[in-house]
Structures are given as structure tokens and as C-alpha cells.
Amino acid sequence: MITGASEGTGQAFARRIAAEGLPSVLLARRLGPLTDLADSIRAETGVECVSASVDLASDDGAQQVIEAVGDREIGLYIANAGADPNGAHFLDVDVEPWLKLMRLNVLTMMQLCHHFGGAMRARRRGGLLLVNSGAAYGGSSFMAAYTGSKAFELCFGESLWAELRPYNVDVLNLVLGKTDTPAFRALLAKNGLPEPTDWATPQDVAEAGVTRLPHGPIHNQGQAADTVGDERRSRVLMIEEMSKSVFGEKAPD
Ligand SMILES: NC(=O)c1ccc[n+]([C@@H]2O[C@H](COP(=O)([O-])OP(=O)(O)OC[C@H]3O[C@@H](n4cnc5c(N)ncnc54)[C@H](OP(=O)(O)O)[C@@H]3O)[C@@H](O)[C@H]2O)c1
Image (cartoon, rainbow, N blue to C red; front, side, top):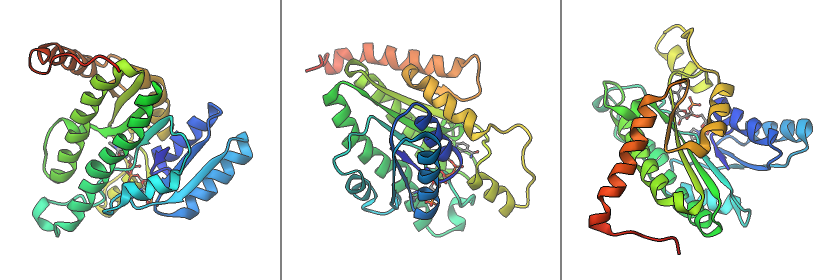
């Protein structure tokens, strides 16, 4: 199941997953591009794709997804949709766009991890792939709500990685830098800025996600020697040891 599958990194994930021979559920708001992609994947690979229009930033975004999925088994949830289209100082726009971003990146993502992660834990098999951003590592101007939401996703994903390891459920925060997507191009165009020359392609991102999925909790895309990711993994494991004196140990049931 891939959110934001109609373009950019989401579309690349859809094609990469189909190349493994796996069927998928493709989600975004606009149904047209999703069904075009599903038709093209089906024609090229014979792999089945289901598409559904959902608004992940609405109050019932998670429920819309759960209904669209029905009784299909979700083996991998790729939480991909989540860029900030506003690119504004926090106080320069109404608060509603920021609330929508929080629903998209925090509340709906968390609800879907709870719903589909629960089934994965029961099956002792599955994966949660959270497409994140270098913005998760700290605050900065123009990105107040975005950095906050991505920092939540980073820590939340690390915690889930620690909790789900014993159940054979992979959790990965795939941390992206500048990536050539329609959404990022639109933001640059809105601000009259040139395209970067050093951005990653969506295909690079999808490949890194699939390859690194078993090696969570974090991978910084494009980093051959990912010292930051390694340090964060060590920290999660260290805290897990320390917190045994507070929470005890939970053996898989
Ligand atoms: N591009 C970069 O340079 C960059 C850098 C760092 C991190 N990232 C991360 O990479 C991920 C993908 O980014 P992106 O640049 O491709 O832009 P994005 O806006 O996150 O993704 C675009 C996709 O998301 C869908 N979408 C957007 N809002 C939605 C909503 N409310 N409900 C359902 N679907 C929604 C869009 O389709 P519809 O419009 O049809 O809904 C489209 O398929 C994000 O998590 C972002 O934070 C990107």
C-alpha cells in the first residue's frame, strides 16, 4: 500500500514493488493519474494494482484508506505522501494548512501504522516504510510545521522499529534530501527558483527504500557511509537497554 502513488517517489515505489511481482494498493486524491499508473503497471508486468481516491489530510483520512483496502492483506505500508506545499512562515498563512499537514504526516500516518502494523505483528511479518526528510533533524525558517511533523515521524518510526523487531516487522525511516518530484518542482517554480543539479531521482529513492527496508530504523538516502543512521540505531538500542529498568522486558506473545 503506497500513499501519494500517483507521481514522483510514490509512483517510483509502485513500479519498484510491481517489479518484485507484488500487487499493490495505490492511494492519492486524484483518481485519474492513479488508474493510468495501475493500467500501465498491469500492462507492463501483469501485476494487479488497485487504486483509490483518499484524502489523507482529512479527519477521516485513515478510515477512507481502511475502507478502500477492505479485506486485502497489506504486507508493506509505504507512507510516502507528506511534503509541505505551502513553503511559508508559520504566521503568514492561516492555521488550517498546518493542521492539514499535521493530519497527513502525523495523525493519519500514525493511525494507519496502528491498523496495518497490528495485523503485521499478529502475522509476524511485514514492513512500515516512512518516507521522511532531512528536515526531521531540526527546525528552520519556512518549515515550522513540516520539521515538527517529520521529527515526530522520525522518533515514532525509531520506536516502532524497536518494538516490532521481535515480531519480524521491518520499520524504516527513509530520509530524503532534494529529490526530483513534481511537488518539489512546483514549489521551486512558485518561488521562481532554478532546478538543482544534484537532486536524487525517484527511482534512486525507491531502490534505496526497498534495499534498506530490513536495516532500519533510519537510512539517509544517498549516503554511502550513513554514520548518522548508524548512530541513531545505536542510540535506540542503548535507550532500549536502559529503559528495561523502567518498563521491564516484553517478550513476544
Ligand atoms: N521532493 C523532495 O525534494 C523531498 C525531500 C525530502 C523529503 N521528501 C519527502 O518525500 C515524500 C514525497 O514527496 P513529494 O515531493 O513527492 O511530494 P508529496 O506531496 O509528498 O507527494 C505527492 C503525492 O502525494 C499525494 N498527496 C498529497 N497530499 C495528499 C493527501 N492529502 N491525500 C492523499 N494523497 C496526497 C499526491 O497526489 P494527489 O495530489 O492526487 O493527492 C501525489 O501523489 C514526502 O513525504 C516528502 O516529505 C521529498
